[in-house]
Image (cartoon, rainbow, N blue to C red; front, side, top):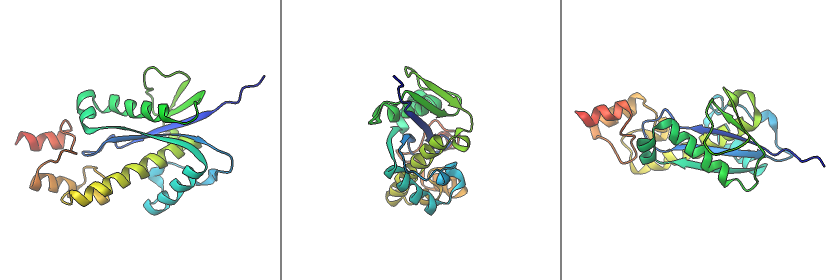
Length: 190
């Protein structure tokens, strides 16, 4: 008997940020999804990405996994990213028998994983995961920006832009900042 292959795509966002968690999404596409919409999330405008994310959610099984700022500090950013991926995969309502992961590292303890460098550009199911993760994390940072308005997170999403760095220098760090990351650590050291 032929067993149907259930493929999940996995990607993370926020590795290079100075603030906020690292977020991963795991996605299994359903019939009916418009594959033409799926490409690397960084190549889609903010508003379009929101709409495409809704489309993907409707036509897929998906799950989100996070690794907190504290976990990033305790583990390092790579291990925290892999932890967030593992959490997303384990939360999927269907168990995939093939897991395609963007990048060149796989979370420990998982079987049937294949890494693909630039997978978010090459593989539609990874593109879908990239879009869902990015929209989720961007919206999380926009929400945090309402409480912490001095860092322009609503537009830089925690990345080290000039506005964010100026906010850090002027107002110091928050509990959402990654204390081990150089620009944040530098401010702590002064």
